[in-house]
Length: 214
Image (tube, rainbow, N blue to C red; front, side, top):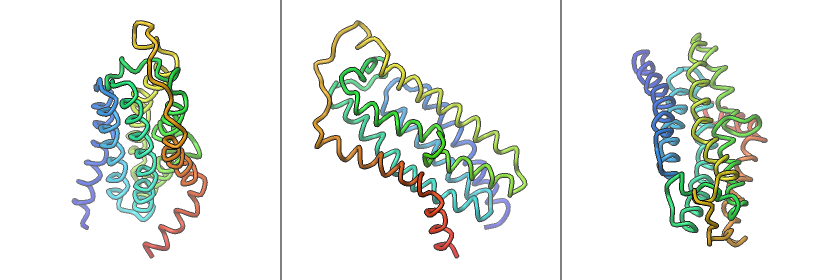
């Protein structure tokens, strides 16, 4: 790839990171929020490739792995909420944590990774992409990572807070739905454990990617 193509990929990455999050913030349905969040996360992958250095490429691949596990968990948990309540609108899911505490708890774990909480894969990706930006002599691009992360907080945080502390169904009504059976929660739990594992063994994972690229 020549310099101009890498620059184009980098620009697309930055636009995806920020605009994907902006559109996610404007959605009223939870599945659409998660879908636009995926656009933002793809932006990180393009960002890493566009930096044009080895560390950027390694972290793009690492982000693919971490995002695949995390976003699968988020979609699965959201699907469970919709199945139990019949509601997709964010405002209709307020207080869902009172009836589905485990599902919302696992959703919260996935959200924390997307935001970039230390140890989790999302943080690892953002940290090393920041270092890759410095290595590529483009330290100002760290600002794009920070902005995108703050936007992540802006749309994940309200979902979690309203889920735990929001007035149920806006009118104090109690959902008839209950938590999913343990056997149905296991796949979601496995994904979240896998997500944490990817973060904990990130050093080994990065080394494997490096060997694969060598």
